[in-house]
Amino acid sequence: MQNPTPRLSFIYLLQNTTPRAAAWVRGSAEAPELSGLVKFYETPYGGVLVEAEIFGLPNVTIQNSSNFYAMHIHNGSGCQDNFSHINGHFNPANQPHPGHAGDLLPLLGNQGYAWTAFYDKRFNIEEITGKYVIIHAHPDDFTTQPSGNPGPMIACGEIRPA
Image (cartoon, rainbow, N blue to C red; front, top):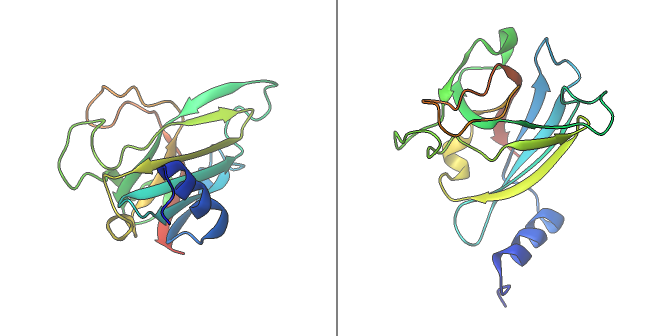
């Protein structure tokens, strides 16, 4: 029997299945303590369930602090050389910001830690495999073209089959 709401299916996926793809993100030279895992699950509704758990965000040492950080899927050829091989957002439908597929929900860091899960139907796992999850130093303003003025890249990880 199918669950009566997508939420129950999503909880089941997170607790009982293996993601189809994942990206280990690691911090830049300016944020070497930053690391985490972003997982991508297939759903019975089409689309992708994304779960991210990130440690070492810049406000880790400030008691009771919180801050938002942009998280995007980018094109590129590798995270080496302090992310100099990362290109623009993944945007197969050539949509304006923030409607393109590379725009993900922001992370809310609480004293350096962030956890989030969300559903996105703008891409599938095959399309994003080989792309890069990027965390930026600032929140996305959801207005500025083409990428939301999120500041420098502070973490990068390649999306690979799990």
